[in-house]
Length: 525
Image (tube, rainbow, N blue to C red; front, top):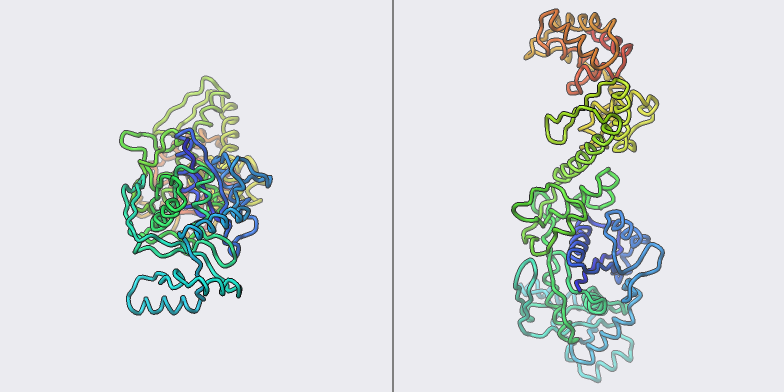
């Protein structure tokens, strides 16, 4: 049976690259009807952050990546091969470190930090590879025993065989290394805690891991691990080294260069589905002929294979994340609106001038009002956390305002205040905004058009349909182009260069505020 694992260190926020590693491991296990294991690698006690393990579990659960074995939020564990936290397995690591010593595959190193620094400086100066020089490999037995008797601190180093080793990487094919180019890695530190290399191999063996997915940067460690499997006489797992995540300048994505913590994207309002699709496509593609632009987690479980992960680094492009977020929200939002419209009026007329864009036409105005109220509430779900108190005081106005900027909110809900604030407070604007040279709107034309708008709207019933009819009739009556009347009107009502249409703004503002803003604009001219 296929068994994969995600083995993060609890040293802080979960990196977006870590979530991708977890996702790939999870998907491969589910695709093959296998098990997905969570293991916490906390052997570096100095870097551990309190609460980080709980945070990791919560993040995985938030994205639907349920593990079959490992620690849980209740401080218990599930699975037959625990403990699943490395700091609780130290006796096991010491046992197998001793076995390596006994069998000649490891040795004690008593070199001081100062001595190692001198060695590195010499190697650097002479352009030699920075590797341990094996000074302690063949210490006389008497000297070794005396150092142990004197309690001189030591580490345990792996004795790398001077031979070639090769392995098949699922993503990269056959890879070869020679032992002469590999450092004698520390396996047990002087504090009696294991390093990643020993703990990783021991845990993967006893937890029966069959496939290891990890970042490309770990390729150089793989021969060290394979030599350990060889020394223990164990069957190694298969490896798949994932492509690096890169910045736009193709440098490695890191915590020092930007916002890479998963929870920050959750806090910004990105949906689970958009983040999952964003990270799965940073390295994987389902192949030619696939028409779906966005997948559910279940669909990814069915489609994902490691063989379709590519080798080259993947660019971390936030515009793509924005696109996935907008696409997912838009699809689901419009599906919801279709359901609501048909529930309110089974005879509603629905036209779709563009894919995933729908115009709803109701014969009964009351049904249309009910639909718009529910539509506004659906939009509100995407952005409620970003609204200020003044926006929430007038629920009817807020509902109608949100409908006019629906597409923008679906794309960037955190910017909702910028989109709708002009409905509640008219921005200061220069009189030049009321004119438009290319449309043939100078100050005189703007003044005439705004006065005409007052005449058209003064006795107009205040529905969107009637507002539209009154203004379009006025355009014909005074014989001007649409833009010559609607540009100064829209500018007067919004105080902005870019905004929703004049008809929609007037309807949302209400008759009194619309007339008031037109009169204010006239005084500017």
